Length: 68
Image 1 (spheres, helix red, strand yellow):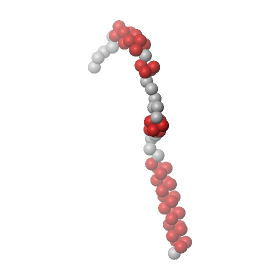
Image 2: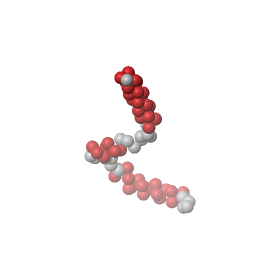
Image 3: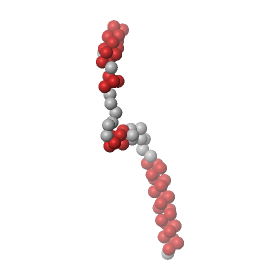
C-alpha cells in the first residue's frame, strides 16, 4: 500500500484541480438510463411485496369461502 507523503498529496491535489474530473462526469442522457439510475438507492422492498401478496391471498380465501 502506498503511503502519501505531504509532497505527493499536494502534487496529486494540484493535478486533480487541473484535470477537474467533476466537469467530465455526466449523468444518464436517455430516459432508459435515467430509469436505471433512479433505482440506485433501492434497498429491496421485498417485505412490503410479501405483505401485499399475503393480503391478496387472504382476500381470495375469504372470497372462496363465501362462494362455497
